[in-house]
Amino acid sequence: MKERRESLIPIPADWKPEVLAYTIEKEVEKWWDEGWVFLRAETDSLMESVCLFFERQLITDDDKDHIA
Image 1 (cartoon, helix red, strand yellow):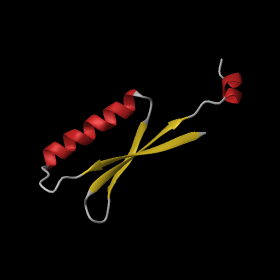
Image 2 (cartoon, helix red, strand yellow):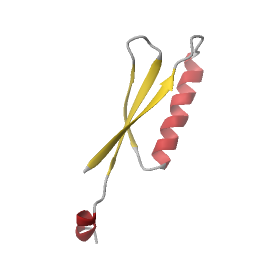
Image 3 (tube, helix red, strand yellow):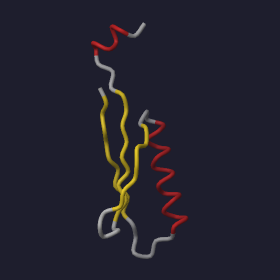
Image 4 (cartoon, one colour):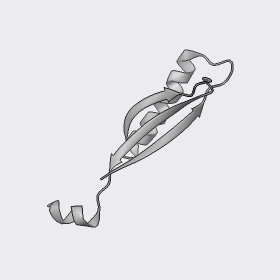
């Protein structure tokens, strides 16, 4: 079973591509360190924010019986 999450990053009016790229990179690294896999990034229609999509595998008690 997979769990999915989203992270919203606001885009300032005077944004710079290299700064936004660095912010996204740091956010993805943070989620990666917590076991999440980055799927994709999308901006909203007004370009006011970037939404990052992540997922990770959930291990249930039933799954633990099969892992050994």
